[in-house]
Image 1 (spheres, rainbow, N blue to C red):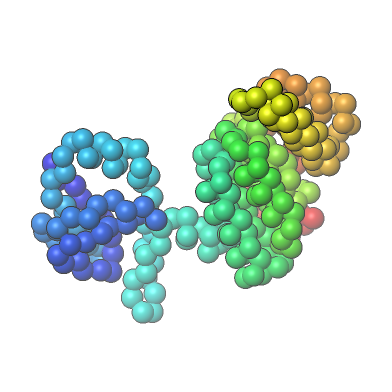
Image 2: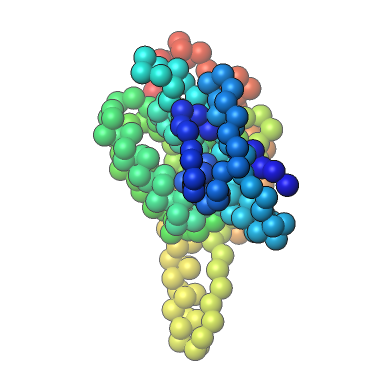
Length: 262
């Protein structure tokens, strides 16, 4: 088995570490290097099948590299860093503490770059940790730039709250996405007193999240409580009528429409 990894602008010798994004793939001796125009292909020695399965399939996502020509030569970005340069943040996959930390850091960085230019947040997530999601939510409300949210694929559970918490008039969904809201869930174990404490805490979270949905959808509290009692799946048009989004888009808005948006 010979593996090829494409990189740019570097020549590797001896023991090397190749990275895609922040993930280390291998620390192996390079067998050969083949130079193409503006591209370096690095071939790595054979890796046992068991190690390949563990290293690649479970731990290393494939992250494309974008190569730009500059006055000083080539510059390589992972795709998400290049999108961040355009003030685009991606929330893809389950929401957890690590993802929350990355998104919060990106929001704060973009605010330091400009407090007026909008930030675009693309969401494709089944939801996840309530506390991690609330960390993202609070930062979205804290920073000064308006945040446009976009549902691409799905925005379920906590992700639906992030979707509807974008700036008024700037909450979008693509036509074949889905949105789902429900009440928070959890589990508890231990002594009866500990279980009671956890139950009271999740009830507080439920009321807190319901109030946030009321704030951003402008629906009555009783209406929200009824709809989150069980999983409530919605098409983009239903989410629009519910108040979770403002627009269903098939194509990006024109420059004129963006300038007219509030």
